[in-house]
Image: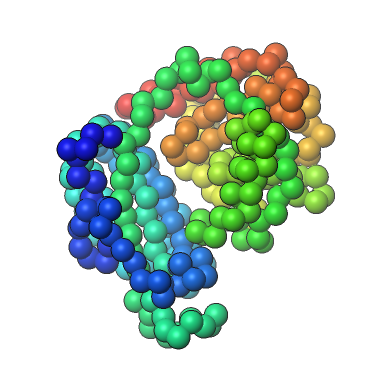
Length: 286
């Protein structure tokens, strides 16, 4: 990033340089992880799939009983101004809303707290198909997260620990597995298993974040007559998968080519991944 570019943040109604932005140490997000967030990609200075991102944000706020500080149009106006303050054509915006500042510290939130709203943006590097097609290595790891992973909450310690475990195993990510053997997600992504030309993914429930990239993949499958099935996936199925993918807003769709030090399928990015990658790029640029 060029030193000449001032990176701006929005905090509680004011734009300010990101490196000067500060929150109170009494903010409940800092003390309790009491907040939610969104990550929104921007392509050619246009917000990608904003209605879906907003619906998920609104749902996370409702389930945590945190008031939404802005309506949908005000949110969009804020995002557009943040985008325009930066020269990058492709960006990813981080939004965080906590329950607000409370003193003295107490697990029980005080009534009528004012939420803390933070937003800032970073440049998003273009996706290089040749580079992404090299794939990543992953491991399986116990799903240590809480019972409401469908909320995009800022409490991500278990996700961090899964990433650390992957790094220690010389891998880049982890597929999380419940005690009953069900595979849920990656450490920060939805997962897909491909077998005999069909895309399988775990159904949305309390252990699955309703990913926006996941939603787009499902839409593209319907449009292009690719079979898409939501069902429970058992850990034992991973070793016989033709392909495994991870999907997130900033990484898009990534093939896993090695799992637990063993090749996935042919050990290379698969044909269906290549097709979906191209469909996704066309959808972004439509």
